[in-house]
Length: 256
Image (cartoon, rainbow, N blue to C red; front, top):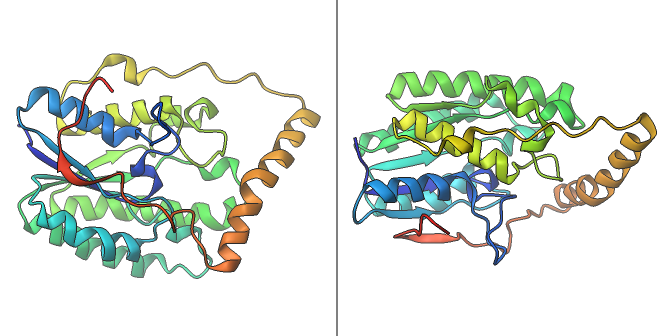
Protein backbone atom coordinates (compact mmCIF):
# COMPACT_ATOMS: atom_id res chain seq x y z
CA UNK A 1 0.00 0.00 0.00
CA UNK A 2 1.30 3.48 -0.80
CA UNK A 3 0.33 7.03 0.10
CA UNK A 4 0.83 10.19 -1.92
CA UNK A 5 -0.36 12.98 0.42
CA UNK A 6 0.65 12.92 4.09
CA UNK A 7 -0.35 15.60 6.61
CA UNK A 8 0.90 15.59 10.22
CA UNK A 9 -1.14 17.25 12.99
CA UNK A 10 -0.05 17.79 16.57
CA UNK A 11 2.25 19.59 18.99
CA UNK A 12 5.99 19.53 19.73
CA UNK A 13 6.12 15.74 19.45
CA UNK A 14 5.13 15.95 15.80
CA UNK A 15 6.92 19.24 15.10
CA UNK A 16 10.13 17.37 15.88
CA UNK A 17 11.56 18.89 19.05
CA UNK A 18 14.47 18.35 19.87
CA UNK A 19 15.91 17.02 16.61
CA UNK A 20 17.15 20.06 14.66
CA UNK A 21 18.41 20.38 11.12
CA UNK A 22 21.57 22.42 10.63
CA UNK A 23 19.47 25.59 10.22
CA UNK A 24 17.75 25.05 13.58
CA UNK A 25 14.36 24.01 12.18
CA UNK A 26 13.24 20.79 13.80
CA UNK A 27 13.18 17.57 11.79
CA UNK A 28 11.71 14.76 13.92
CA UNK A 29 10.04 11.46 13.21
CA UNK A 30 7.37 12.86 10.85
CA UNK A 31 9.97 14.31 8.47
CA UNK A 32 11.86 11.02 8.58
CA UNK A 33 8.70 9.06 7.78
CA UNK A 34 7.78 11.46 4.97
CA UNK A 35 11.28 11.16 3.52
CA UNK A 36 11.00 7.39 3.44
CA UNK A 37 7.51 7.44 1.90
CA UNK A 38 8.75 9.92 -0.69
CA UNK A 39 11.42 7.45 -1.75
CA UNK A 40 8.83 4.86 -2.71
CA UNK A 41 6.04 7.09 -4.10
CA UNK A 42 6.64 9.44 -7.06
CA UNK A 43 5.02 12.85 -6.61
CA UNK A 44 4.71 12.40 -2.84
CA UNK A 45 3.57 15.47 -0.89
CA UNK A 46 3.99 16.20 2.82
CA UNK A 47 2.74 18.93 5.15
CA UNK A 48 3.40 19.29 8.87
CA UNK A 49 1.04 21.64 10.71
CA UNK A 50 2.18 20.75 14.23
CA UNK A 51 3.17 23.56 16.62
CA UNK A 52 4.81 23.15 20.01
CA UNK A 53 2.74 23.75 23.11
CA UNK A 54 -0.63 23.31 21.43
CA UNK A 55 -3.49 21.89 23.48
CA UNK A 56 -6.10 19.62 21.93
CA UNK A 57 -8.49 22.48 21.12
CA UNK A 58 -5.70 24.43 19.46
CA UNK A 59 -4.66 21.49 17.32
CA UNK A 60 -8.20 20.79 16.18
CA UNK A 61 -9.20 24.45 15.82
CA UNK A 62 -6.11 25.53 13.88
CA UNK A 63 -4.96 22.44 12.02
CA UNK A 64 -7.94 20.22 11.22
CA UNK A 65 -9.64 22.21 8.46
CA UNK A 66 -6.39 23.14 6.64
CA UNK A 67 -5.38 19.48 6.80
CA UNK A 68 -8.68 18.25 5.36
CA UNK A 69 -8.49 20.85 2.58
CA UNK A 70 -5.30 19.15 1.36
CA UNK A 71 -7.23 15.89 0.86
CA UNK A 72 -4.54 13.67 2.36
CA UNK A 73 -4.62 9.90 2.14
CA UNK A 74 -2.46 9.60 5.27
CA UNK A 75 -2.86 11.66 8.45
CA UNK A 76 -1.00 11.42 11.75
CA UNK A 77 -2.85 12.83 14.75
CA UNK A 78 -1.04 13.14 18.08
CA UNK A 79 -2.83 15.31 20.64
CA UNK A 80 -3.74 15.47 24.31
CA UNK A 81 -0.33 15.15 25.94
CA UNK A 82 -0.17 18.85 26.81
CA UNK A 83 -3.73 18.77 28.10
CA UNK A 84 -3.08 16.06 30.69
CA UNK A 85 -0.29 18.20 32.17
CA UNK A 86 -2.97 20.74 33.16
CA UNK A 87 -4.55 20.34 36.58
CA UNK A 88 -8.08 20.98 35.31
CA UNK A 89 -7.93 18.42 32.51
CA UNK A 90 -10.87 15.98 32.39
CA UNK A 91 -9.46 12.94 30.54
CA UNK A 92 -12.81 11.22 29.73
CA UNK A 93 -14.19 14.41 28.17
CA UNK A 94 -10.93 14.97 26.31
CA UNK A 95 -10.94 11.48 24.84
CA UNK A 96 -14.59 11.70 23.79
CA UNK A 97 -13.65 14.72 21.67
CA UNK A 98 -10.54 12.88 20.49
CA UNK A 99 -12.73 9.98 19.31
CA UNK A 100 -15.05 12.33 17.42
CA UNK A 101 -12.10 14.00 15.69
CA UNK A 102 -10.58 10.68 14.61
CA UNK A 103 -13.96 9.57 13.29
CA UNK A 104 -14.09 12.70 11.17
CA UNK A 105 -10.58 12.11 9.85
CA UNK A 106 -11.40 8.50 8.98
CA UNK A 107 -14.64 9.55 7.26
CA UNK A 108 -12.49 11.18 4.56
CA UNK A 109 -11.13 7.75 3.64
CA UNK A 110 -7.62 8.60 4.79
CA UNK A 111 -5.51 6.22 6.83
CA UNK A 112 -4.94 7.70 10.29
CA UNK A 113 -1.98 7.16 12.60
CA UNK A 114 -2.55 7.45 16.37
CA UNK A 115 -0.01 7.16 19.17
CA UNK A 116 0.36 5.64 22.58
CA UNK A 117 3.00 7.98 24.01
CA UNK A 118 6.20 6.70 25.58
CA UNK A 119 6.56 7.04 29.36
CA UNK A 120 8.21 10.40 29.92
CA UNK A 121 6.78 11.19 33.35
CA UNK A 122 8.79 8.67 35.38
CA UNK A 123 11.73 11.11 35.37
CA UNK A 124 9.76 14.33 35.88
CA UNK A 125 8.08 16.13 38.80
CA UNK A 126 4.36 15.56 39.22
CA UNK A 127 4.51 11.93 38.17
CA UNK A 128 1.95 10.81 40.76
CA UNK A 129 -0.59 13.31 39.40
CA UNK A 130 0.06 13.06 35.67
CA UNK A 131 1.06 9.41 35.16
CA UNK A 132 -2.49 8.05 35.72
CA UNK A 133 -3.78 10.50 33.11
CA UNK A 134 -1.13 9.41 30.62
CA UNK A 135 -2.06 5.78 31.19
CA UNK A 136 -5.75 6.63 30.71
CA UNK A 137 -4.98 8.56 27.51
CA UNK A 138 -2.88 5.73 26.10
CA UNK A 139 -5.51 3.11 26.90
CA UNK A 140 -8.25 5.27 25.38
CA UNK A 141 -6.23 5.96 22.23
CA UNK A 142 -5.97 2.22 21.62
CA UNK A 143 -9.73 1.90 21.95
CA UNK A 144 -10.29 4.84 19.60
CA UNK A 145 -7.97 3.25 17.05
CA UNK A 146 -9.86 -0.05 17.22
CA UNK A 147 -13.23 1.65 16.99
CA UNK A 148 -12.32 3.78 13.97
CA UNK A 149 -9.96 1.49 12.08
CA UNK A 150 -6.92 3.71 12.66
CA UNK A 151 -3.33 2.48 12.82
CA UNK A 152 -1.85 2.48 16.32
CA UNK A 153 1.80 3.31 16.97
CA UNK A 154 2.47 1.89 20.44
CA UNK A 155 5.48 3.60 22.02
CA UNK A 156 4.21 2.99 25.56
CA UNK A 157 5.08 -0.70 25.49
CA UNK A 158 8.55 -0.14 24.02
CA UNK A 159 10.66 -0.18 27.17
CA UNK A 160 13.74 1.09 25.33
CA UNK A 161 12.25 4.56 25.84
CA UNK A 162 13.26 4.24 29.49
CA UNK A 163 16.78 4.97 28.26
CA UNK A 164 17.53 8.68 28.92
CA UNK A 165 19.60 8.75 25.72
CA UNK A 166 16.36 8.69 23.71
CA UNK A 167 15.31 11.97 25.33
CA UNK A 168 16.66 15.48 24.94
CA UNK A 169 18.34 17.51 27.66
CA UNK A 170 14.97 19.03 28.63
CA UNK A 171 13.78 15.50 29.62
CA UNK A 172 10.42 16.07 27.91
CA UNK A 173 11.10 15.86 24.17
CA UNK A 174 12.77 13.11 22.18
CA UNK A 175 16.41 13.25 21.13
CA UNK A 176 17.48 12.62 17.54
CA UNK A 177 17.85 8.92 18.39
CA UNK A 178 14.39 8.93 19.96
CA UNK A 179 12.85 10.44 16.84
CA UNK A 180 14.58 7.88 14.62
CA UNK A 181 13.22 5.03 16.72
CA UNK A 182 9.74 6.58 16.65
CA UNK A 183 9.95 6.90 12.85
CA UNK A 184 10.83 3.20 12.71
CA UNK A 185 7.72 2.40 14.78
CA UNK A 186 5.54 4.48 12.45
CA UNK A 187 6.89 2.82 9.32
CA UNK A 188 6.37 -0.59 10.93
CA UNK A 189 2.72 0.36 11.58
CA UNK A 190 2.43 1.29 7.89
CA UNK A 191 4.14 -1.90 6.73
CA UNK A 192 6.95 0.06 5.08
CA UNK A 193 10.58 -1.11 5.45
CA UNK A 194 12.76 1.25 7.47
CA UNK A 195 16.44 1.92 7.84
CA UNK A 196 17.41 -0.76 10.40
CA UNK A 197 19.76 1.66 12.14
CA UNK A 198 16.75 3.74 13.21
CA UNK A 199 15.99 1.04 15.75
CA UNK A 200 19.41 1.46 17.33
CA UNK A 201 19.48 2.70 20.92
CA UNK A 202 22.54 4.57 22.26
CA UNK A 203 24.24 3.24 25.40
CA UNK A 204 22.66 4.39 28.62
CA UNK A 205 24.41 7.35 30.23
CA UNK A 206 26.71 6.52 33.13
CA UNK A 207 24.87 6.66 36.44
CA UNK A 208 25.98 9.75 38.35
CA UNK A 209 26.60 10.06 42.05
CA UNK A 210 23.74 11.33 44.20
CA UNK A 211 25.25 14.85 44.61
CA UNK A 212 25.98 15.12 40.88
CA UNK A 213 22.50 13.93 39.96
CA UNK A 214 20.88 16.43 42.33
CA UNK A 215 23.01 19.21 40.88
CA UNK A 216 21.80 18.23 37.42
CA UNK A 217 18.20 18.25 38.69
CA UNK A 218 18.65 21.74 40.09
CA UNK A 219 20.16 23.03 36.85
CA UNK A 220 17.35 21.39 34.83
CA UNK A 221 14.68 22.95 37.05
CA UNK A 222 16.14 26.41 36.57
CA UNK A 223 16.52 26.11 32.82
CA UNK A 224 13.35 24.22 31.89
CA UNK A 225 10.87 23.73 34.75
CA UNK A 226 10.80 27.30 36.03
CA UNK A 227 10.11 28.83 32.57
CA UNK A 228 7.37 26.23 31.99
CA UNK A 229 5.70 27.17 35.29
CA UNK A 230 5.99 30.86 34.45
CA UNK A 231 4.25 30.30 31.12
CA UNK A 232 1.45 28.42 32.84
CA UNK A 233 0.96 31.23 35.37
CA UNK A 234 0.93 33.92 32.67
CA UNK A 235 -1.22 32.02 30.18
CA UNK A 236 1.51 31.85 27.59
CA UNK A 237 2.79 28.99 25.44
CA UNK A 238 6.15 28.11 23.94
CA UNK A 239 4.42 28.12 20.55
CA UNK A 240 2.82 31.57 20.75
CA UNK A 241 5.17 33.02 18.13
CA UNK A 242 5.72 29.81 16.15
CA UNK A 243 4.10 28.93 12.84
CA UNK A 244 3.86 25.53 11.16
CA UNK A 245 7.15 24.51 9.54
CA UNK A 246 5.49 22.91 6.49
CA UNK A 247 2.05 24.53 6.11
CA UNK A 248 1.50 23.32 2.54
CA UNK A 249 1.91 20.01 0.75
CA UNK A 250 5.23 19.68 -0.97
CA UNK A 251 8.10 17.29 -1.67
CA UNK A 252 10.68 16.50 1.01
CA UNK A 253 14.32 15.69 0.45
CA UNK A 254 14.85 12.24 2.04
CA UNK A 255 18.60 12.92 2.34
CA UNK A 256 18.23 16.20 4.28
